Amino acid sequence: MAELMKAAIFIEPGRIILGEKPIPDVGPLDALIRVTTTTICGTDIHILKGEYPVESGLTIGHEPVGVIEKLGSAVIGYEEGQRVIAGAITPSGTSYASMCGCHAQCGAQGKHGFKAMGGWRFGNTIDGAQAEYLLVPDAMANLAPVPDGLTDEQVLMCPDIMSTGFSGAESGKITIGDTVAVFAQGPIGLCATAGAHMMGATTIIGVETLPERQEMARQMGATHIVDFNKTDPVDEIMKITDGRGVDVAIEALGLQETFEGALRVIRPGGTLSSLGVYSDNLTLPLDAIAAGLGDHTIRTTLCPGGKERMRRLMDVVASGRVDAGKLVTHHFPLDSIEDAYELFSHQRDGVLKVAIRP
Image (cartoon, rainbow, N blue to C red; front, side, top):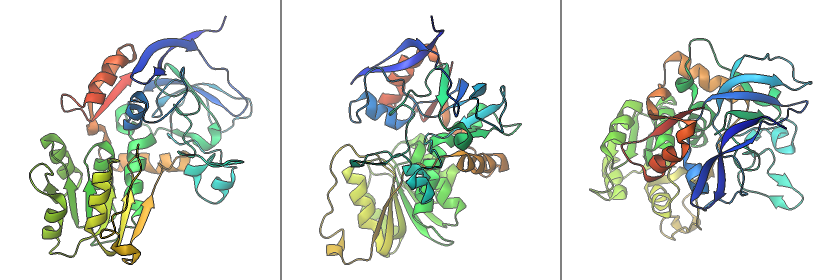
């Protein structure tokens, strides 16, 4: 009989439970890692609510920090017992998308066109990280050793939140002296704010109503805060910019309202960088899109993955340029994963991110 492990299992919309599953077998190109810390993502909440469909019985989670337990027979360059992370997106490195340089979309191309979420496999198409063990496919393309001296919590944001948030700034092609608005200062929005600051933006406007998130946004580099419960964010951002609008607006929530707000505040020729996961159709108002004549760029981005991306992000953490560990506000053992979901899904007690330890 196969040895069992504990895992957070999606049963049906509204129900994720702690159950047991067999510890995965390791194929030639795989690695089995013993998970030491993981977390819950907003996308996991979309799954819980039934807004993003996955199969019943799937282990959820895509943000692993762990130790290599077993290596596949063809895997070289790593050793058992080594501390590693793997990105939420796990490219093979050999697909057409990867060969075009778009590693995040590895796996998106098939006989029947494109599917959403490209190279996102953990907790989407294969078992994920909210478990005692995780099978990492294409290990040599995806495992990144954790530098000595960095804690699990310091690198916990690298697999998804930092990679996604920074990519919002990167996709916007922010340059020195830019003015940037970031709609929503949840974990991804906060990392987008930090990314905009690192790339040279000098005016960064964070749109947020929760006081603890407003304060964190300031720590991450926001120069202005707009409380959408006290003022119309579009009007306020246009006042701050003397009517010019922003060079880049980053949408980090996934709602029509914030998407449209971001579109309305970009200057002619400006860029809307979209990070939100949308669960309904978006519309483009005629005036906001300038009837298609405003030279606007709308850019969508899926979290970049792969070991080189993870290495670079951990270098950012090690340099002290960004302290992502302070986004972890709550801690739970894996045995209390259902309590962690209840807290995180209802955004209670000032939660930003939870650390879950098997």
